[in-house]
Image 1 (cartoon, protein in one colour):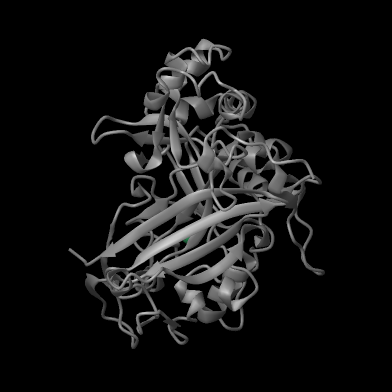
Image 2: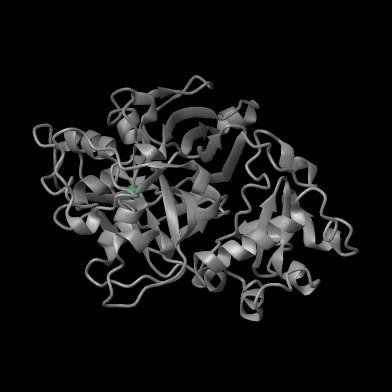
Length: 429
Ligand code: CA
């Protein structure tokens, strides 16, 4: 076991912290309201302003074009250079933060470049052009399928291709933004006629998203062995879902208004390079599962050993100073379809990729009851409500509820995390 490298930023040594020297994620922040976005990284409880770092002459070894991309208000330009270049940027930043290096630590502008994270506001990291949501957990697909089609939970295509749909990019919001309970068209238990009003069965979906860095040409499928070259990094995703709307609208073309009112993402994008030590062989296949077709098969394919938890805090819990209650704990490695398979399938028609496209995994559910990644499954459609410490219980989300998603990877004594993906439910307007 190699000794863990340290940073001169003391808080980066917190063994339970998300942002040690091993992470160096990318994000966009604003230092004061309305000053636009600034590209940064997180180290311990600090945020490093990368444009200011470059202006101070400390990233001069990077090409001009790359340094200029750090002055943007999104990560799109930086990510478009692809993984080797971004890896070089990460390495340059890391070398300035490592213990024993005094270039930044002793710099006269240090306090302008390295700011307390508590004093900045995180924004969306990318201008997101396109958003695709998959359905890659066998446990989730089987659980949901068996509620609606007990005899036929998995559709015949499910183990042959990663099922997905094209989602709505405009309503993807940064962590911390409140979510207003939407109105929608639903039918009562006994069937039509429908009515329109505030949705009753509001749910979260615990997902992992990945951002595209280097794009691909329209008409040129990305072979699976090159798929990960196009992936910039990962974020946590809450795909807010209105189950009563979904049930009425989903046939024949899939989700629409049930999913388009809000999707929350965590602010820091953890790069594929940072995740490298936490990659494990993938994907899991049971005996009797069909062989995947060649374009979905890659001998070196990997899953990510990423632990995930969902917590809920009601308004009453917050008033009484109670800690948020963990509702589920799962792991992203349990997914059936991998990131590389999703990219290969998505582009197999020649569909192009662009920097800043977001793809999400679909609900991450594991084999156990407490690893189910949404309330629909966790409460089995409301039959087994989840108790909260304020004495109430949840079948679905109530107004005032905070939903908090956290994720982290751990190997030996190294732990890197994603920060939080948080949203509060406001009453319907
Ligand atoms: Ca979803």
